[in-house]
Image (cartoon, rainbow, N blue to C red):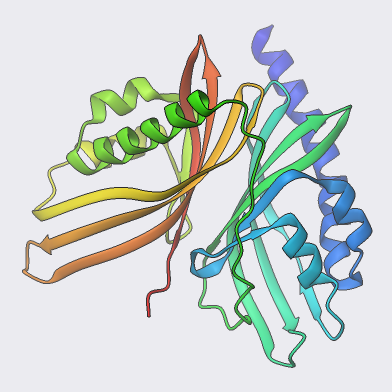
Length: 277
């Protein structure tokens, strides 16, 4: 019976989301910033190509710029999980058109979207774009957005968990992550595929030839919405591979956590490579 109710709930959300998604997609080519203002919740942000973060306000400003003509499509929409009034989906989003400065825009992305139900309506609180193909789009405006932070102690706890998460992934501590990952945990990886928790844990536990060190910084709690928290960070991995060549990689990561039994559990993450000069 429980599984049946969950299936019905997911189907109902899928139907509701498809209608919202069509409006969201139409708003870009038609420059309907009024609809986006209604759709975006306070603290809404998007991680874009190159690891740059734009706030909802910056996104609306960019979409409304005269001379911008971008066609956006979407397919492969998958409802990954619904926790109470929070839902996470992934999709494939191709873009094609012309930027406001006349440059051609072309790109294809795996996108993780996080939505929250507020007063009976689904509102967008975060999106994370991971390039599937090389993009020629004009670089977005660099900006930082803020969410609703409930307490300093809650924010500090989440920051500490971010460090523990990355430390465990770097050191191969799959036991800690198995306890930390919530049901249906998944990750949109830097090259686009979606990996479930079992696949992530298998890769983390596997021996890694070479010498590496990794850490996270630039951690920002974007919002705490009841039992859901969203944060972004920069993950850095440095070292030498088994063949001797240097490794120096950086990713912008969006992380979603849900409080279950008074403990924060990781339920989703998405990575985008940071473009280094």
